[in-house]
Amino acid sequence: MSFDECYLKSVIRAVPNWPEDGVTFRDVAPLFLNPKALHMVADSFSQHYMDSDITHIASLDARGFLIGSIVAYKLNLPLILIRKKGKLPGQTLQEEYSLEYGTATVEIQQDACSSGDKVLILDDLIATGGSILAASTLIRKLGAQVTEAAAIIDLPDLQGSVRLQEADIPVHTLIAY
Image (tube, rainbow, N blue to C red):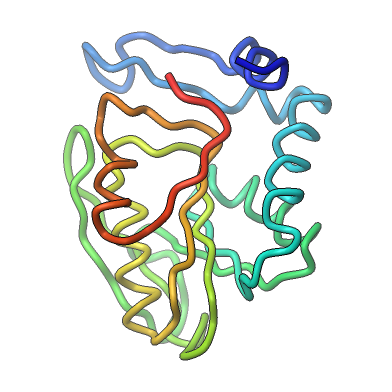
């Protein structure tokens, strides 16, 4: 494990039995209170994608917005917002997906991307992969290509990264638990 991985793991908070018994929630909020850790995360993603052919970054409501906006800014790319149902104005597309402990629906504005666009989906973590798979479905419905999914954290025991790779979506994460 690299120094960066060890440092990031020391900053991320484990919250046992939240949001329900048996779940250990990996809280990235402390990263945003720690400028060194936030720089490490933003710089790592920015360097990784600097020479890629992506044209847009899509991030998921709400923690994905935080890192997605920083990376989009650093790479001078448009940011696509994938939001919870009912939060976006105008014409939208919706996609329902399963969570570890329920279901949810996400939306994208119909003019967020189009044919020929190459989109990186960026979120805080990959658990079951449901939200990223739903986001990829929406992006593809608009005619764009999903080039990769990235997250700060991978929870490999929940098989989300495997599900994404089986859907032909490469995965890049910084740390795993």
